[in-house]
Image 1 (cartoon, one colour):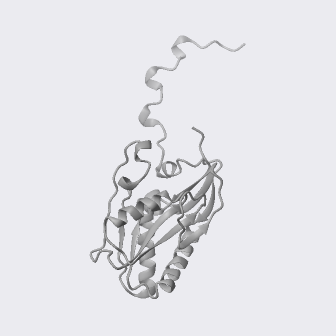
Image 2 (image 1 turned 90 degrees about the vertical axis):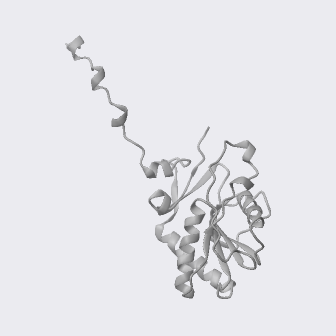
Length: 217
């Protein structure tokens, strides 16, 4: 017969797990928020991302006839890191310093009234500006096109480039506006029940693109 638990054997309050002893979510777990870890699958890994950025850099040089007047502007957050990586690859190809900066679109979004206030990111325009230059906007994922529309509005308040092009790591389709990328790392057919998450080492600790089921509310 099993012995009954004595009152003195009950767990004391001091023996309970303290909040500080609980396992803390690491950087990667935070980065994977929005994609169910059990269902997400990688569609691009670090070496794949490096290869497609190299290809895009060569395409830019070819289409821009040497990229003499190119300015790269990344859309925060991960678009900025991608723009910086592209700039480094272009410098290797052309042996010239490539102007690179960032373009915050927060105040130009058309959903400001539908979501809680967002923190402003940083806009950094290279010293020579963008007037008369070929500006290439860089982002991680092209989806509805509304982010790029906001970027075009923000760009219009800064200067008048000769032309504007778009480079994205992933184009997942489902456009709501007539916007098309000029340089695409990967065309990824998706459903609206899926979500695409780009992770980059500068922000998330590793390079990968995850495709997973959209979390239920």
